[in-house]
Image 1 (tube, rainbow, N blue to C red):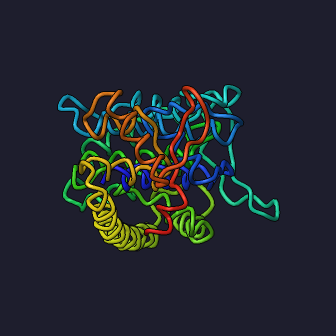
Image 2 (tube, rainbow, N blue to C red):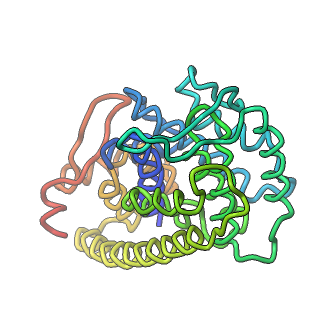
Length: 320
């Protein structure tokens, strides 16, 4: 599941940032979000992905924190993590000016509440996150958390990102499934026009908490169902691929652990540190294993020194 979870995490994060115009290739996204973001981001889009990954690292840490409680500082810190590369947008601070969202034709589609109301409104959101509608299904509460945050539009920028991160945190706190497998960011990125349409219909152009939110909740539940079906298909495909990799390793009489290196190479590439950690072997043994796979034509080396990476070789792609 390691490779699948990394790919799902990268897909969710890149999907969420791409909604706001920050998009990177899938293989680069995996490099940026794995292992605490060891890859050096280059350019604003890559920084957006790397920063969002750090925010999701915090979500993972908060998910099973026994002393966790909802505070405005939680949301402010998550915003700082996700938007710290945008220093001119006051990451980690409530906005001080009026804000609106314009459509493709330049018309005003949404107007946020006055800035002086933001601290009190977000205090209400935080109170609801802690105590409101606790009897509702977690997917419904997560959808409403997203709606509450984005309707207040509390930040100068990154309101969509933070709303989606808070939604993921609500899901993660329930502990039904890991954040990268439960989030719906990929679906939202692939259905952005429907996503915005559901928000516009529910919000009615401004902060109107009395409006019916059923259209928005239905959209999010449909997204969860679609995303769950996709994850199940990915798990089935990964299991089939793993079985084939086991056959390849067995044919050579190699230790079973080499399957991990092959799987990692297919999920965005691998390196000595990643393979060593996941396979539970020393760096020296990891180097020997990877060299064996390179010599067999199953892996190819990319980069040098600390930037050495191992990608699928031509023979591996033929064998699969």
